[in-house]
Amino acid sequence: MPYTIHKNAGDGPDYVPALLDLGNRLHEARRLPQCNRSIEKARTVDRDSVLVLSDLAQAYALSGDKAEANRILHQLRQNSISSFVSPWDLSLVYIALGDKGRAIALLKKAAGEHVGWVVRLQIDPAFDSLRTEPEFRELVQRIRIRDPESVHDRGRQRGSGIAGSESSAQVP
Image (tube, rainbow, N blue to C red; front, side, top):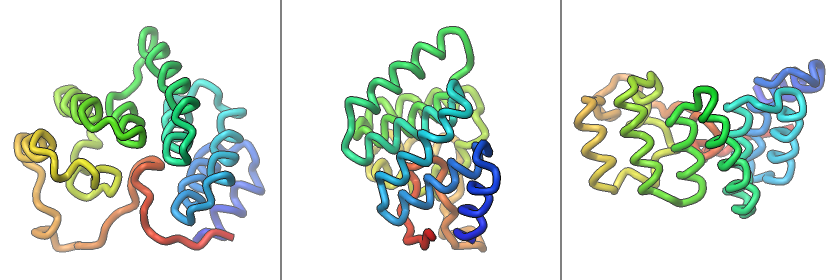
């Protein structure tokens, strides 16, 4: 699979989903400089994409460049004045920055706005750092998400965004 992602990104250098997916895989492999370059390349194609900016802010935060992550977060917040920026995407950036309080507040807002991704709160590794937080557990109970241990397919799914990519991966 990683070969396919890399091949697709190479064959279509402007294909943003492949560049973001490659960035996620590179992060999983702890190849952070290459991860950031892949997502930066996606940004050259789709400069104002919330998804690209969110992934890029997460990548910079997780690679230690919190100043750049905060600069991009500021841009996302500015964009939210005139267009929709999902509180889900913002929450992932705050998780990467280590701000659990703001992340949980945004997840509550996402649940209130019926953002479909909230059903992933129990299985997405991006939220592992929040699982012990009482407010997070209350949110999960309030929106009645089933315990992943009670679900037949016990395999963990790939996280959404950079912050959720913690599995080992092979990248060409």
